[in-house]
Image (tube, rainbow, N blue to C red; front, side, top):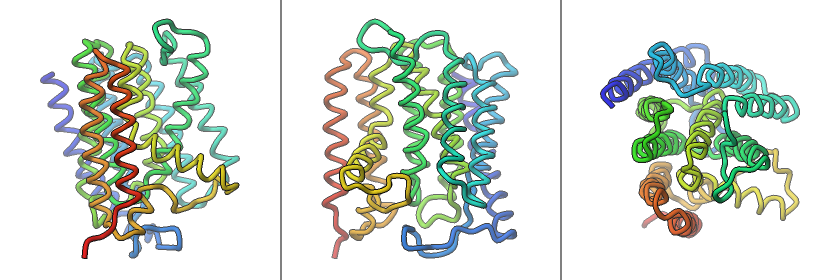
Length: 328
């Protein structure tokens, strides 16, 4: 625990400084996200803060590997995350079609599944071969939905810190010795360091260079929890993002919209359009996530009760976002 705490503190300071340094470089190079009709911001803002955040996670991960305290397969996962970050940086700068991005994401997920010794998603009490397919679909969807949900100040940092904190708690309480806890602590602290600069009004955005590999890393952590038996917790911790992104996707499919095109119809985006500011929406996600963390802990002893309460929590969040109006 002491080592994890020290590494988390170092990761926070590293991320805080690295994101600031990246912000200065992006401004000098005029690499800015300019507002358009689909934006939720109104002024040009540097985009690429994920570079600093990922640098902190990478440094912490390398320390864990060097000390022999890393989860099995972390070296491969970091390499895959870096490959996704490079592709996403090109996408940020030049724009890539879904046909160019998606196959690489699929390949990264498939390669990542080879880091597991057993199926990382358990159906009931007995693992089956179908678990590999479910794990891959979940992971691939989470990579993309994390990118979709990164649309307002603070929300990605809040979600990353909350999922990582929850993963660390579950690893501790479940007695995991697979190195999940220190890595989760590093990820949480790195996200908080980024959040200092990204909280509303944001001075820098994460960018696809951050959101895609972050979704990949968090998906892997969640599947590590599932592989250790905490499958319900692995579903509960990201439930706020899963609920918003999945229901929005289904709604767009029913309407016959092109789901690969950018839009502003997520619940959190509609709340901003209805007059809430970015901080108000992100704080709502923070509150929901704190409840979900508590329910993830409950799931270790009462899985189905916790899952039902998590569904109610997410439903309450989404209804609140849909009905929320700015005050007078």
